Image (tube, rainbow, N blue to C red; front, side, top):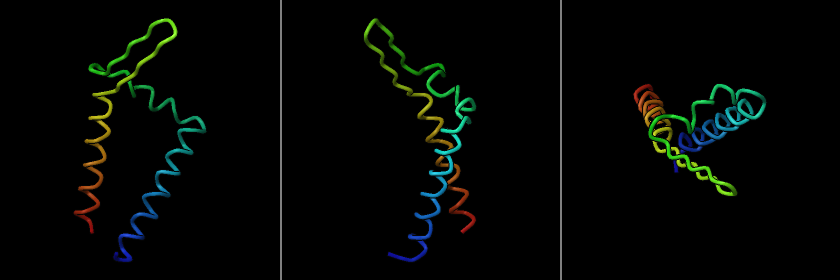
Length: 75
């Protein structure tokens, strides 16, 4: 394993921790769209809730792919 991979994993972990802290301390209102896009499956019945955010996960996947592509191009 190369030292650059270790460094990248540390920074990725720190970034995820910062994102989690931001969402936890009130930034969650920015993510109000998550799970509510057209194409997301939502079933609510008495005593039962099911959320399957298909389209939201596609959007997240596209954003992560774009970020990783930019990081790869810059390095």
